[in-house]
Length: 138
Ligand SMILES: [Fe+2]
Ligand SMILES: [Fe+2]
Picture 1 (cartoon, rainbow, N blue to C red):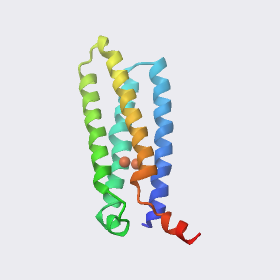
Picture 2 (spheres, protein in one colour; picture 1 turned 120 degrees about the vertical axis):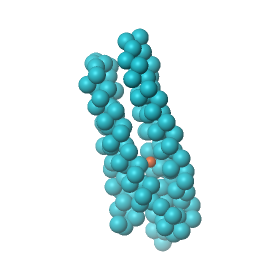
Picture 3 (cartoon, rainbow, N blue to C red; picture 1 turned 30 degrees about the vertical axis):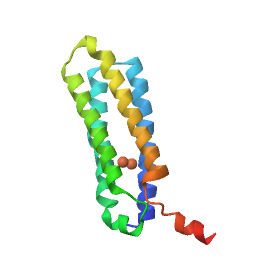
């Protein structure tokens, strides 16, 4: 796949995921239920994982060779940090303690903001700068 198309696809996924997180936050405010927690976990464990896998597998060392500014390890590291926060959330949920609701909501909001920050970081700093070449021609 062309690297420029891939990056555009990834950025489009970021926008979809940001919208989903906004919707989940709204649902959480009005309805803290097992169902919404299940949907959030499913989103974190499938959509977000699939997106991360796509980045790690397709933006690999091969790309690193062509774009010297690109650091695939930085992306992998950020994904690992998010994964750890998801594991913590699963632990909080597994306690199934009503008094724990605030902690669960706090952890979900923390994960959502980590993911949003990560998307911004990718778009602004971590993704290979495929547009640089073009700029040099202008
Ligand atoms: Fe990522
Ligand atoms: Fe991403």
